[in-house]
Amino acid sequence: MDQGVPVGRRAIHVRRVEIRALRAARGWSLDDLAARCHLSPSTLIRIEAGHHRIALDQLTAIARALGTSLDQLVETVADDVVTNPTHAATRGLTLWALRGEPGVTVAWMRLTGPPPEGLAGLRAHPGREWFTVLSGTVELLLGERRLRIEQGQAAEFLTMLPHAVGALGGPAELLGIFDQEARRTHLRERASDR
Image (cartoon, rainbow, N blue to C red; front, side, top):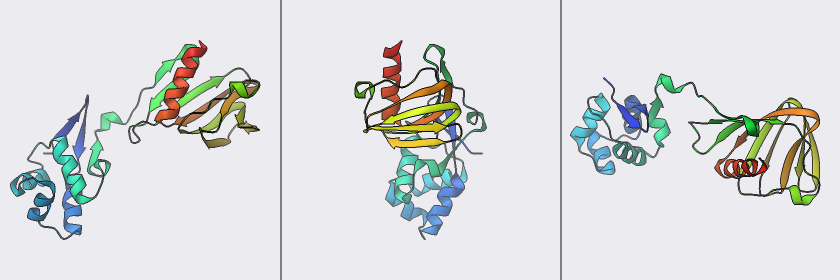
């Protein structure tokens, strides 16, 4: 029986067949892999057979030795398929963390006002952003450019370029993907707007 690796409050299951397949693809014996990841061959036999509860540091060492990532060697249990968002109604923001991309967040936003006037209202920060307009029309100020993004269209840009977004002609809703730096900056800005 496959034993999970506890990570925080959820368990991940090791793809033991994947470990064996990657080892075989490289033409390595159990002894070869054991020497590369500093585990005993008997421990590796039990791990590959599913008779040994694997520690995260052991799994990391195996992934490194096989030249792969932890993501390739684990799968989340079925309970982790559904994600519940966090809501910040006063800020018009709903957030979902992406499990497969640590540090990346999906955000739903409702914009009711136009973007700020003048360059002073634009913000620049490290990161990358992508968003698609779900309803209404959004105006994206990107440096000295004014871009009109209609429902169904998307925009992607590096956030070191000064930028701001707002609604045109009525409320607009958008779904955005923010990396860790962009998310941190936007949450801080929206909190200070309250």
